[in-house]
Amino acid sequence: MDEYRVSRSIVWFWIAGAGGCLAIAVARIIPGPELKVLQAALVMVALGLLLGWRGTMSVLDNDTVRLSEDTLQGAGRRFGPLIGGGRTSILLADIVCVRSLHWGVWCAEAGDGRRVHWTELHERSDRLAALLSTRVAQG
Image (cartoon, rainbow, N blue to C red; front, side, top):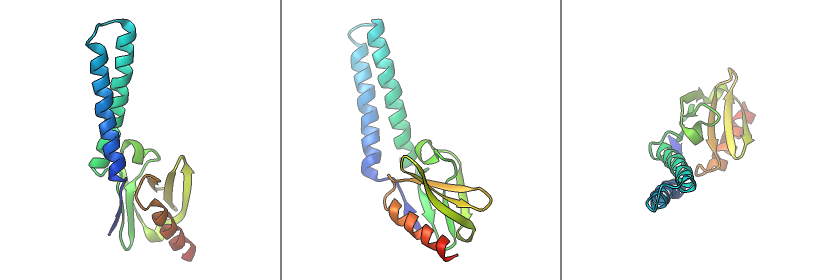
């Protein structure tokens, strides 16, 4: 079984960025509770939580795409690779198309509408797209 994951260097960058944002927020709050300072700190906390959440999705392998001899399994929703969500499993024989959607998001779609999504941040994502496209073309 082949696994396609988001590059670990990107994941740790997100997690480090989250820590940095939260540290900046705390540093901004310490001098005093002025409204502008609190607003800036709130933005940094929100950004830090977003980056941390995204990094955690990858650490937990929620966005890993798995390809076996007869099945493709991965995020079942369009933004699943970005924010987590339900996973879908599709038989390779059921895949009718492989295409790029937007902003580096790809999908393999079954005839019944089920999809498995991945992004260009996944290691070897181009190989996965080419392999699946070849299988679809061969029928």
